[in-house]
Length: 209
Image (cartoon, rainbow, N blue to C red; front, side, top):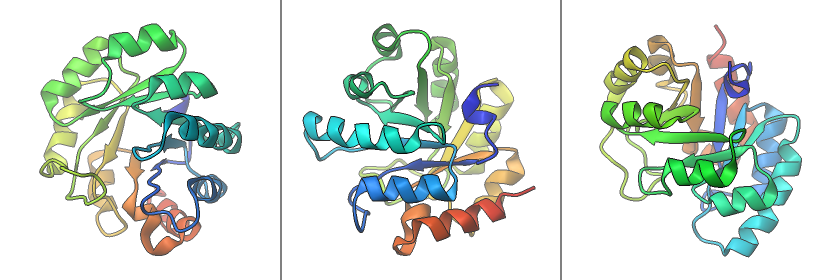
């Protein structure tokens, strides 16, 4: 089993500098201390140089405690020797990313439909980020929520590990878990009220079997 999914910490944290009260570095330090399986560094408003500087700090924080992935930018992932990347539907193609990263790095792919999930599996993705499950305000031009139905379809027709994403919080997390999904990516649910450590602690308790 891939180490991401052999982890007893089922929360996958995605950074968002727009929601940060201090800095992304502080956010990740707090999240890793609270216990997450992975950190995805997602940044759209900084230069590549700034991103590399920040990503190096994040990688150090995550080292030996959580996987460190970079959203979209394969060059940044390579520059800091991240554990891998997560690719969205408008990002670099999987084949290109794999050639650049080599065979050992993790490549996760977004799936907003069963067609995309099957295509990602065929290409060789290591895991799928499936959603948006519920309505979310953390992403501009977000798609309409897919509900639990898409999670069920992807679980039934693929063999890849699944990370559910999109509008998941303490009030609806059990709906996702009831389907059998055990890893959940979160942004707003973790940044809520600026208390990252407290939010993760609550969410982890809710996710205990």
